[in-house]
Amino acid sequence: MKTIAGAPWLIRLLPFLRWSSRVDRRTLRFDLIAGLTGGIVLVPQGVAFATIAGMPPEYGLYAAMVPAIVAALWGSSWHLVSGPTTAISIVIFATISPLAAAGSAEYVRLVLTLTFLVGVIQLALGVLRLGTLVNFVSHTVVIGFTAGAAVLIAISQVKNFFGLPIPRGASVLEVMTGLVTQLDRINPFITGVAVITVLASVATKRWLPRLPHMISAMLAGSLAALVLNLVFGGEARTGITSIGALSVGLPPFSMPDFSPGTLEQLIPIAVAVALLALTEAVSIARAIAVKAEQRIDGNQEFIGQGLSNLIGSFFSGYASSGSFNRTGLNYASGARTPLAAVFSAVFLLLIVLFLAPLAKYLPIAAMAGILFVVAWGLIDFHHMAEIVRASRQEAAVLLATLIATLTLQLEFAIYIGVLLSLMLYLNRTSKPGLEDVKPFPGQWPPAFSAATGLPDCPRLKMVRINGSIFFGAVNHLQEALQQIDERNPAHRHLLLVGSGINFIDLAGAHMLVHEARRRRALGGGLYLFHMKDEPLQTLRRSGAYDQIGAENFFSLGDDVVNAIYQRLDTPA
Image (cartoon, rainbow, N blue to C red; front, side):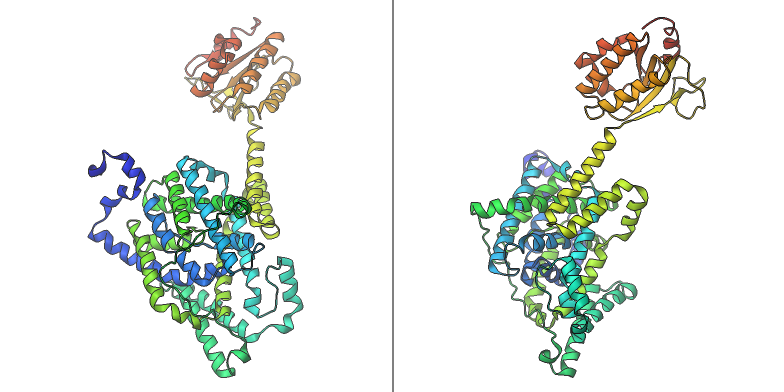
């Protein structure tokens, strides 16, 4: 923008100035329509997410107001809509419910403190420009974690879906055992309302895709509950209860607990929630940005998400992140700028101010049905099958993350998935491939391939290293290079094609020097061809270049094969 081009510090402080020039009467119209659509959908979603998180229902709506506005204005995505999400909600319930009774004042206080810490961590990561950290939470880990979280959501609602007396906080095995052993105690009225809600959601998505399926399902469940209560004598006979009227207005001011004991207790959980939330938000922003032909600034998204949680914790908003459903809806509804997310929060406030009393007609069984639908939609069967087909190692990470999510505290499940992913990555990179290659006959400049069909030279072995030579790979490469002349003692001369080497550290440089000396002692030599600039500079700075010998390095365009052949009868 020309008006602020001379003040880059102002753009960093107020990043919404970057896209303010895109706003005009046309974009405002599109953004208002998208915002209204999003605001309507947010009502049932906010209540559902708060229920998952163990928070009073209105807190799910508060989390979609101030935090959504801050994230939109201080993020970098034009379409990302932030607020409560399923994954974050289930993590909050699983990690905070052992510390306090869900829905209690103490529970709310702990959740708001957790939200503040999450915001501080995210903001710090953004300011320090550590946006690449989310790359360590692999797509496989997210899919496994989300699938496990989906099962936990469904498990947490079994008692409300079937009307069974299952204790709060029961494990997956305990809930399933309780269900099987109490089949004769299932309440048919409650289960009927829940099943009707599920069927209405599925039918709306299938035959009336333009309608919001969650709202349609809630209306169907509420109507079914009303009819059953009228026909069979009311709540005392059917057991169908409602969530009660929502007392929702402007988000009330709240104060996190800054006592040292509470902060120390919540910091490990906050780190896991912060990483998961950032992974969610940045992944969704990038996915939509591809369609919108927009470039996402990961560090700015960190800052936007951090500020939204930090500020949101003082306005009764619990930990939020980017929502895939609402972001996709925002984009599909024609949103042009982040103002659509701002309008969505404003419309949500207006809607709940006038419609909140109607929540007293919403049955708990209908909410359980909605959460069953949400849980089913979270399990990405397509990508899970793709992972299993493509890689056994990735399938192991998926399974381990899924099992850890179901059996351990959720923050540890994320850590386990990340740790396994890193271990597999290090295992792969510590074993760079050593590929037999030969020169293409008559091609200039010389090119080497494993597909020439030529036999090995009796005196000279030619191989290409596909991977970096660093401390973790040194032992593997030393063994592989020694096996060459052990298998064929005539192969004292070795040509390394370096086009596949991206990085060499000091340990790698020492290994190459050692190999060059070893081969000279055998009466042969080590030669390197087509090294990239970065690893070549490392060899020069470390002194390895001179120790190997400048005459043993060949660049692209050199007649490397003929030059080496002339030395075969002369010890290198």
